[in-house]
Amino acid sequence: MATQHFINDGETLVQDALDGLALTNPNLIYDRANKAIINSEHDGNKQVTIISGGGAGHEPSFAALVGNGLLGAAVSGNVFASPSVQQIVNTVIKVGGSSGTLLVIMNYTGDVLHFHLAAEKARVAGFDTALLVVGDDVSVGRKRSGRVGRRGLAGTILVEKVLGARAQMGNVTLPELQKFGEDIVGRLATVGAALGHVHLPGRPKADFVESEDQVELGMGIHNESGCRILKPQPPIADLIDQMLDQILDVNDADRHYVDFDPKNTVLLVNNLGGVSSLEFSAITKTAIDRLGIRNIVPVRTYAGAFMTSLDNKGFSITLLNTNDEIIQYLDVPAYTLGWTSTGSQASGTKVQAAQEVESSNRVHAEYASTSLLRVDITALSTALLYACHKIVDVEQEIDRYDAVVGDGDCGSTLGRAARAIIKSIKDDEFFAANTDAVRFLDTIAQIVEDNMDGTSGALYAIFLNALAASLRNIGLVAKKEIVVEPTQWVQASAEALEALQRATPARAGDRTLMDALEPFIATLKATRTVSTALAAARDGKNKTKGMPAAFGRAVYVPEQSWSEVPDPGATGLVYFLEGLFSNW
Ligand SMILES: *[C@@H]1O[C@H](CO)[C@@H](O)[C@H](O)[C@H]1NC(C)=O
Ligand SMILES: *[C@@H]1O[C@H](CO)[C@@H](O)[C@H](O)[C@H]1NC(C)=O
Ligand SMILES: *[C@@H]1O[C@H](CO)[C@@H](O)[C@H](O)[C@H]1NC(C)=O
Ligand SMILES: *[C@@H]1O[C@H](CO)[C@@H](O)[C@H](O)[C@H]1NC(C)=O
Image 1 (cartoon, helix red, strand yellow):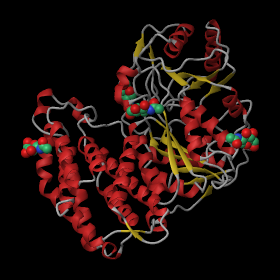
Image 2: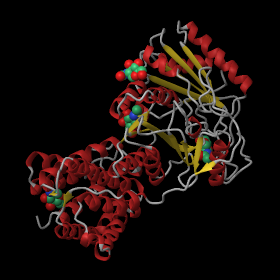
Image 3: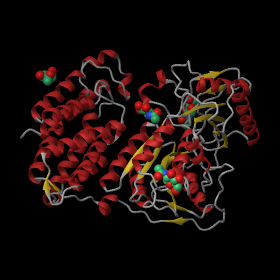
Image 4: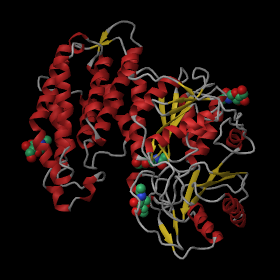
């Protein structure tokens, strides 16, 4: 493993790399503030916009896949780190148009939370936005990946290529494109293998010593481990056979996802970044040979560095089960530097000054949402103040619970957001004057997002933004100003819960705030009675006592701790709801 780099500063490295890309492709715009690459010729009113993104270190993914026939834009985080919510929202608003925007991402917790939250915020700002999450790994099987789900790997490129060509035709709606994307994801399987791990620029040097003469099967694209070490290193044909077994064995209950049609299978051999071109081409030939022995003759073969993991000496094999329609979209040329196939052609490499665009800073100021829905601002602010004061009162109690089963900061995290809301309501004239329900929620959501970090902050922010977005849609049909009816609050809350459930796999029973939120909203929907719903939330919270955790740090806590305290997140939510409805 090489631990030396030419450039060790992760931040300048990513910015300069994006800049360099735009300098070699005149059709690209480099948006420095949002670390985004934008297709200058893209028109989001004529076709659905496809935006992808994630951590850097996977080049050419995703920035070099921006161009006609593929992505409208790509947003980059730092090396192996998700981009921020604000970067994503700004890019959607800048590039997306009236045809809507599909965010295509890989299945990693950070990306999934950030892009979901960004999608809700974009919707609140009036930009129709949907998400497609790609999980194509088969190596870390169902049992081990469990609730964390399948990782996204190189197959993501094929999904984006097909959707890019489909979207370009123009006659497809956002929901149709999303559905088509889900269909393609269901036809994909990928397995990686590597000779070693990678070193991240800027990290301390002597990480670990790698033993020679071994291969790691199932290697991820962020230096994360695979499923098995093969030692000694098998010959390449044997290695590829083992990889193909993982993709094709229909009797492997843990890994079998797709039934491949031997006559309609597409092969993608992907260089993880560090395999010499000489070796890589021979690997590709071997993969085709080994598939041939299984009577699979790929209808198309793509080979190259599409989804890298820095300079990892490894490769992955992806199979896509296609049909005529999918092949047709794969064959449409894409004018990008990253999609290299005989069907595509890079659109000129003339060097010109990279176009930089000024970035809009806060979406909030410019695109503040307005609606015809009105609230009684005095009553709502008062209720919210009660709820926040309640949280401040119980902050230490919740921290004590969290000290038993987590980091010990759940209460203070909630407290920080509560104090920020109290301060804003007291100091900010906005709350005295504003009666627009959507702007009200949008503002509260922003305060929560700015003041509450970690997963719980993201979950609250997604819920509040989704609540605002749902109300906004409800308000669109109103012809004049109307006060939000209780039934409309209930409908919007139910939709916000659905949005949240798309962003997190946590459900009631996993010892999270969902144990209180799900019964609260379900009961509210069924009975329309706040007191009954509150009792259901309390009951759900009580049941977390004794329940083992399915996610987060709490998973590593000794068993007897479960019976000592209820889940701190669910407890916090119950206190908040009790405060909110104390005068109901
Ligand atoms: C992504 O992971 C989640 C769990 O976090 C899982 O439920 C879901 O099925 C995965 N999605 C894909 C497309 O693999
Ligand atoms: C979209 O347009 C193309 C050609 O412009 C046509 O072949 C195709 O059938 C259309 N698809 C739909 C779903 O309308
Ligand atoms: C990469 O993986 C190896 C082996 O698991 C680990 O020791 C090393 O710390 C990792 N490096 C980084 C930067 O994550
Ligand atoms: C929840 O537990 C508390 C204290 O253990 C108890 O006072 C309360 O009645 C319980 N509530 C429900 C709805 O079970």
